[in-house]
Length: 178
Image 1 (cartoon, rainbow, N blue to C red):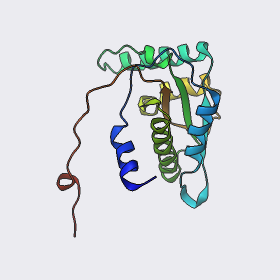
Image 2: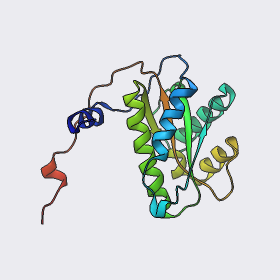
Image 3: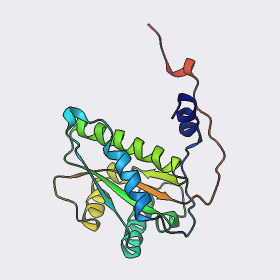
Image 4: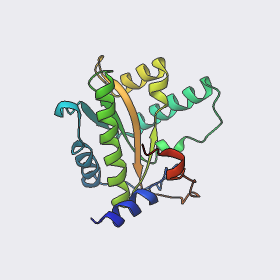
């Protein structure tokens, strides 16, 4: 892939909250996870674990938990049905250490770009890691180990929308050359 192609891919990727009711093959999900495990990690620790949710019952439980969390925090109302029309992948980290969390974030970025390159949409949900009670509830749903930390819930599926592009800050606004 050339530089221009990579930047086009990064620029076209955006969060999708409406997925088609179309199953994503195991082969595509494995390609997305494979992209995640190619990410660099501190001391090559590879502290991640990916839990792929295929069961509609589990998706419904995650959706309900997420809806409850949104209500609890008085966030704006949102139809959360997109969780049930996607393939949620729960990204867990070995522990709560900062370096492991950063390593997992690098894996997630690779997964988001891989899904875009495969013609899939994606969305990340970080809210569970912002609320200890909700994180514990999610960990129970996916049978996570006690010491594991939920980094993000990543949703993947076939896009059923083309959201308006959000503006990004310019280089001048974010970079300082010393």
